[in-house]
Amino acid sequence: MISREKLAKLNEREQQTFYARNPKSRAAFERADHLFGKVPMTWMNKKAGGFPIYLDRASGNRIWDIDGNEYIDFALGDTGAMAGHSAPAVVEAITHRVKDLGGLTTMLPTEDAEWVAKNLTERFGMAKWSFSLTATDANRWAIRLVRAITGKPKILFNAYCYHGSVDEALIVVGPDGEGMSRPGNVGSPVDVTQTSRVAEFNDLEGLERQLKNGDVAAVLMEPALTNIGIVLPEPGYLEGVRELTRKYDALLIIDETHTFSAGYGGMTMRDHLEPDVFVIGKAIAGGIPTGTYGLSAHLAEKILSRTDLDLVDMGGVGGTLAGNPLQVAAMRATLEKILTQDNFKYMIDLATVFTDGVNELFEKYNLPWSINQLGARAEYRFAKPYPKTGTDAFHAADPELEDYLHVYLANRGIMLTPFHNMALMCPTTTLADVEKHHEVFEAAIKELVAG
Image (tube, rainbow, N blue to C red; front, side, top):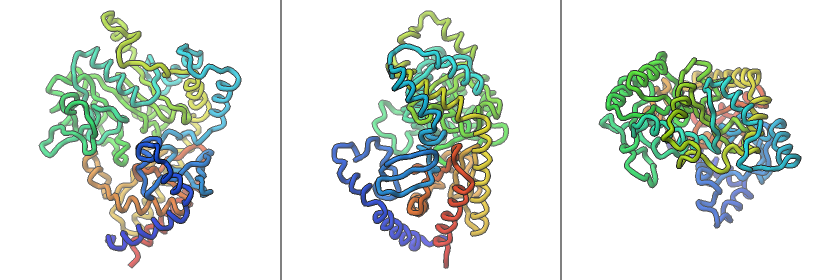
């Protein structure tokens, strides 16, 4: 249906437009000779336009670049800014901590920390909490704890899951049905199959086959895959995972760093999940780096009863800057005043309008594409029906088509997540913003299918 020759020509045209719109960003990128990969963090090189757009300022769901272009931001820092950029309540809390109170990092607790932990318990059900600077750190520390308490060496993941840059997680299901290193895995310390096992998401049979080996300390999973499209759980799948982990004496770690978009208490509250360990990061501090892991009452008691474990200073579990006063103040402001039940309802309702509108366009132009929604976020994939496993979602990618749509939208003031086709709502996103996206998205589709 889609001419690849036409797509290549449209891509070339949009690239030229992108260059013309962003001369200052292009020049800044070309001057960045002292940065590895010319960017402060290598993921910033994941861009469709040939160079990244350079930020001037941001507010709510709006971004302005150094060329003066304004964008409706549906990327929101790939979830990190789900509360909106520089939300006033977070700015006030940060300013008070920095200007009035001082002490940005002190290795001393503040009373805000207990408020945050109590709120996290109300949302996600875990009894005890510990803070980190990223969800990657929280996952690493959780892995060390579950290995220590179970005596088992391996962690089981879903193929094409996302748990930050955790070495053990970079495993996928190979052609023979067993684990292999994920494509693009760089500098792994050991063969990933020595530390990990893997099963496809939505595949209980495959999960049980791996658990039967008896060497899995824990299953670490997202309750819906989020970094390879949004792969939703089939009915009964999550309940089946919990049953199998208990049957084979493996702990269950649920990472809701991205699936928190599902609502006030993420999928854990919404779907009555029962993890032993819970991990979340990114969005809960309004943009200030953060992560945290929570332990069930039973597991926390079991760990604390182990007098042979050095839990005060166990190697690799903890960090000097984690739980610092600035981070904790930002978490409290975000959880108390921004990512509230009312705001989640608004964001989810708006994402439903977004999803319905995109679906209507797919049907109108008879495109074999589909879109999934997870609370306040939605993402389309170039397949119909939507893939049900990470591997199928991976194979449904179309980099050339993705680049065209990303650059086309960016050239007209719409920003999607650079890593994938994800749109996220925040409390300041409006219906008019969603309608503007649909208008531009339809124009991009029309040019693609014309003739």
